[in-house]
Length: 315
Image (cartoon, rainbow, N blue to C red; front, side, top):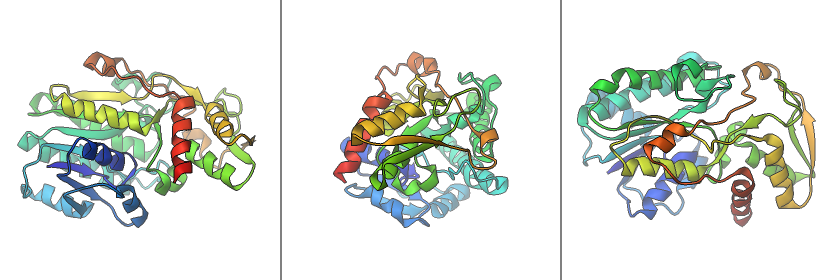
């Protein structure tokens, strides 16, 4: 059996779908189902069971084994709102839960592949997986970094594979439930469905309007990296998951405009309090990932956004 937390969420549900395509249906999906819209992400998928995240946490903390042997644990679930400043809640839901997952897997020698985040780099301009580059700007980023630090400290004693994947700006199928946390590609798509104007932020941090740059990565590429590590249990560590190429928000907007064949771009002020905690530039340093042996190419914004919007049209 394979466990996938956050299995009805964005990356988690796409991972479930990809595992099904490999013939794996013995999947235990755990999530928070307060937002029932996420269940739609499992349409067409085959799973062994679906359980509440609290139920699974209770089993992990009790030290009990599950009914079926576990081959691997994909820990994709998290409270992901970067604007949530309730540090106690963020640390409890993300860091404390993840500590329980790590301990349970470590005691049993079960491979663990978990979701970290590029948010740990904060406003810096260096994105190698090294402590000197890590400058979290919000509780979400801290909750991710604390687990990475714990994994580093415990690495000598870990009995099985442990991989932390620092996702950069992910977009693609399965994110419609995310609301304000959805990708800019999805938000701009909705805006042009409803009118002829799409909005980006005005200039900031020495970048012109819409020229802030992020490493935008299609969710299918994130899933491919997860599965590669599943196939290579000899590889452990913390790895960036991005394309290695920063592109502008204007690039994303132009891809959306090209898809619709219409649309004007307008630039609007930042909401109060967001500018200082805003990552204006990210670009994954993927040398560690390549050195580990991952050789697949990544989709650029032009192809990835076009593919995504065609998928949205089909729905």
